[in-house]
Length: 331
Length: 128
Ligand SMILES: [Zn+2]
Image (tube, rainbow over all chains, first blue to last red; front, side, top):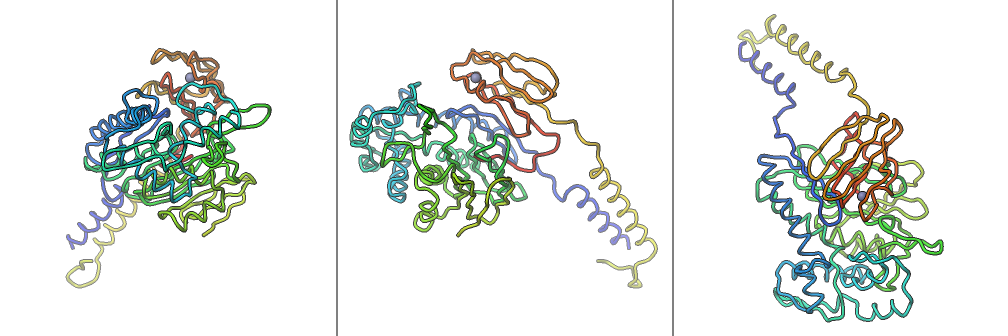
């Protein structure tokens, strides 16, 4: 009898307190990689873990930035060689992605970016001449990057830009650091690119921005942890000249802004570097090419927004929410 | 479930069940019918720390950080940076924000002005 009452009482306690006490999440804002990042961690010792994560973001920012004197990429672009395990590994993966995407992603577009004024310097935006583009194209290409253990050799005058994989790499590294410190769940908003680590007890819910309307959302993605949700869009950076809009996602084949049927591509993938680079590659390849790429590259999902107002998505956890789009779940 | 010696729940068991149910109902009601928190407000972060929360009323604010000054205008309909001395001027170009989830960022000054809704957004992050 008494036992019965006790059990009922315990059940009631559990029900009323929400089953289990969790440590409250801790958040941190970090200004790095030309954006503002928000890190939220669940688990014990969150603040200490965030300190380490913040430092790592500053370090990587300096390490991967082409314009930072003393960075590995700066040295590589100047000397054509560098010995650095981290850079070698990142460029190995970049090379694999360049190959898997048929060159739609290319880490050697630095010179082209500079030509168009999308580079790291405060260069003026302008439309370069075809001669300038051809000259830059002549020494671009992932084939000019050679890796031998920890050594990287770059065939100058090819110039590297790791902007297309920096955030993916940062997400991977920060997750590693958080995991080492016992963090069991974290959501890293790296300026619109999201990395999800582990679990917070329930599914993660990520709102996906409508590229056409500030403050509106295409829908909400419900997903497990250990995923990266990286987006590239032609709306992010652009300039106009003589009434024509030129955006910052360059097609490595033409040296000009990608002219595909996509406004934006969101890639969901277990690997941060791949997710980051694939988002760019999808924008270059277009809807059909992106869906084709899913059959040959690492496993990944997409949410694609086309110029004619369609949203094509391949993931089950995505719930459409915006008006004015035609939604299509595709294979 | 344990049973009383005769195998049937007695009056006391029923009472415990009733008390527990009543308690649960009362607490549930407190959650469901809680007064709504105030409307959306602006959350201003300077550097890494939140520095103030401003309701959407007619007011002006000036924030200086990292060597740059950002001037914020607020009305009941929205908020915007009307001028700033940062080199990029992205904060000025962002224009008016009013809906939860929208924000103005001045990277050079390391200032974030975000709209936070009265209710929880229901998601963990915004992608894109
Ligand atoms: Zn500014």
